[in-house]
Amino acid sequence: MWTTTANIKGISAEQFPAIPVAEENGAVKVPAGVLREMIQQTALAAAADTSRPILTGVQTRLQGSTLTMAAADGFRLAVRTAQLPADVDAEASLIIPARALNEVARIGDDEEREVALSALAGRNQVLFHMDEIDVVSQLVEGNFPNYEEIIPRGYSTRAVLPTAEFLRACRRAEIFARESAYTVRVHLQPGESELVPGTVTVRATSQETGDNEVVITASIEGPELEIAFNVRYVIDALNVINTEQVALETNSPQNPGVLKPVGRDDYLYVVMPMHIHGR
Image 1 (cartoon, rainbow, N blue to C red):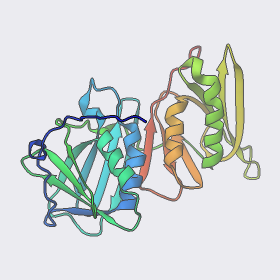
Image 2 (spheres, rainbow, N blue to C red):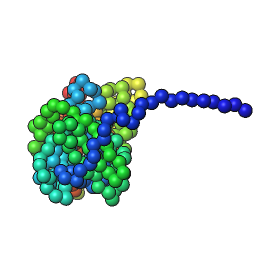
Image 3 (cartoon, rainbow, N blue to C red):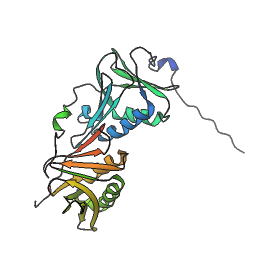
Image 4 (tube, helix red, strand yellow):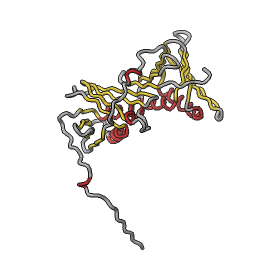
């Protein structure tokens, strides 16, 4: 028989920062399921490196009846929009830390309820209010880059292919791409005629491990093209694109690629190309 005694030191509740009280006036209500999906599709592109603090946040804009979230880390950009039930009282642009948003997404897992989003005037904070939970976060100070300048306005080659097959191909390629900075080559080959479909070939090579190549049937517009990406960035996007098909658009091997869910126009993911030696 034995006994043990533990003493845990703490501080009084009065010494903790006061939690703001959620107010109905001025709060923007967003369905929890929509907000969670928006966070999952954008926060992944926020920077983990704190050397540029502004890029560790997700720009959240409220304008009219539209909520827009955007994040970028210098190598990729994710933008998601959603329509609100009603126009907002006043336009606002907040830069919310991605870590705080990921907590909100984790907590707000009830599809039916709403999340009330409020910017706390004079406190540089944002409040997310749910039925029994309030999440308060400091905002990131600064000016978010004008990301719209890097979004391609058109494309020369566009491939439409099954999302799940593209994701599987990239996951297999990742194993062989680790030694080459996760570089994979994506070859877009149009079909020879309307009856012969095009193909997307995902290829990775490793001097130590070997090589891997997956060919996927696809619908392709435009000329033949090969472009290289960091496969991890492509996998991140495909993991959160929920449509059966995805579109890959680009203009040249030196220009960014754009991934979009087919059948929806509320999300896009821009990924910068990688240089292929010997090209």
